[in-house]
Amino acid sequence: MKKIASLIILTISLILLAFTPLLHAFMAGNESCNAFTSGCDTGNGDNTNRINSLSLGRWIAEGGGYFLQSIAGIHLLFSRVELSEVSGTDFQTFQVTINAAIDNMEKAQFAYWQLKNLAAFTPYNQAVISRLIEFDYPGFQIETGLIPSIFVKVQEYLARGDVRGIYNEFYYNTGHILKMLHTLKKDMDAGIFPNLAMLWRLNQRCSEYKLFAQYVAEVFYSLK
Image (cartoon, rainbow, N blue to C red):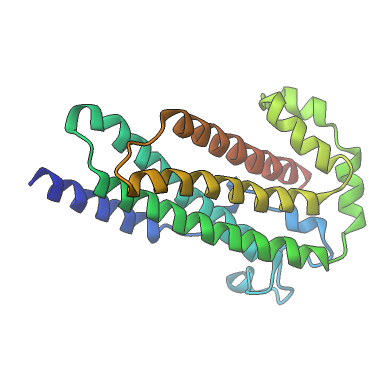
């Protein structure tokens, strides 16, 4: 009965995650599309269609939304592992949770693949690029209290106007996280308890990437 109840709660949690709105881009690179001539708008003046199927803004939003949904699933997995010390190991629950996290991370990576490919053929907005190059990154870091070791990676790209490089980072980071998730899944499918060192590294990688993407958004918001 406990296992059935646990699966019911897990299923409800995953359903709620699946229907979470995808427009989380204020946390993951929002407004960076303004560094391109196409901007973040469709050009028709209709805010209801602001993010269309061919825009950089849409892929930023989808990538960020699915990434955060995957992170929520990963955190749910962490909580299940943590609670297993008192409630016992339930590999079926582990498998359902990690499968959902993988599915959302794959969707995020696909969105970032579309984003980086579209950006590769879209000219930069040189006025915005100039502002990025002239931006006071050290002052902004001190003022906002951003973590220096992560913000410096954002600065390395934006200080030279390389927004496409940022999008490549989005794509490759989700790919790296996916490899870690598949390694964990392989163990869980074999009935092996998740490797704690791998869980720690996964948590670190997710946290670093989430802050990297957030800091990109913060810089672009400050330019508005």
